[in-house]
Amino acid sequence: MANYQHIEIDQRGAVRWLWLNRPEVRNAFNNVLIAEIAAAFAEIEASPETRVVVVTARGPSFCAGADLNWMRSMAGFTHAENHADALKVARMFNAVHSCSRPVIARVQGDAFGGGVGLAAACDIVVAAEAAQFALTEVRLGIVAATVSPYLVRSMGARQAARYMLTAEKFSASAARALGLVHEVTLMEGLDREVERLAHHLLAASPAALAATKRLLADVVEVPMDDVLLAATAKCIADVRVSPEGREGIGAFLEKRAASWMPKK
Image (tube, rainbow, N blue to C red; front, top):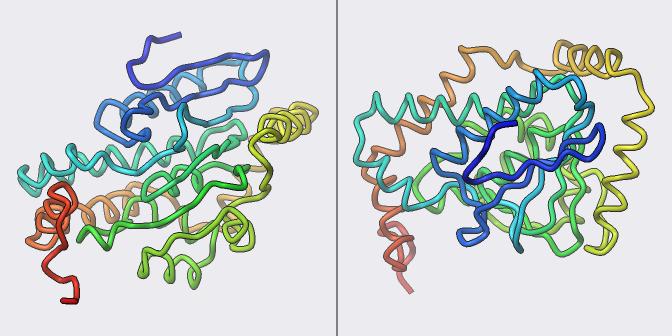
């Protein structure tokens, strides 16, 4: 098993727990974490002893989305460099989503931006009652592009549109009503619920589970092919290097209002 800088792997029998481990920045994505998640899922595919995957995180937050300092550095890159970088992000989410094993998201704390996308890319989502969700990208002058296929799949187009456009926070209970979350529990019951679901999954045929995931992809989804991944990567690359993209990220890091905010 590989050594990772920003994730921890905990093999519990046939269940592999993957922990995001950047609690000091609320488990925000940077280039290292993105590459490590993709590598960890490639490793899972080559691991016959792993039959169920749990994605979770250390610290009080599940995932705050993109590390804004990393995003600011991306704004200084060329459009081609931004597109290549965004394509790595898109492929990372797809590695989670297309995993041949069932994947449970254990959302113990807040999930914002790409953190919502990470949960949506999983097959089953269990959230702590106090967890909050938000798709905050538009407030930063950017777009929830690479996660959009998974949001539409889990929440439906109309609800995804609302929360992608308003960037408002919503509770775990609201996320369950929207279809993003399957089960909501008190924090002290979170592991018990994850283990209960894993028990059901382990009682099923591994080949039948993999076939079911392929069937669902064929029946209900826009194909997650290279064309779609490239289109979502181009969308975020365009806005990252745009004036408003740079202004929004700069305003957030400098703790000031962005130029488009209404004057009080």
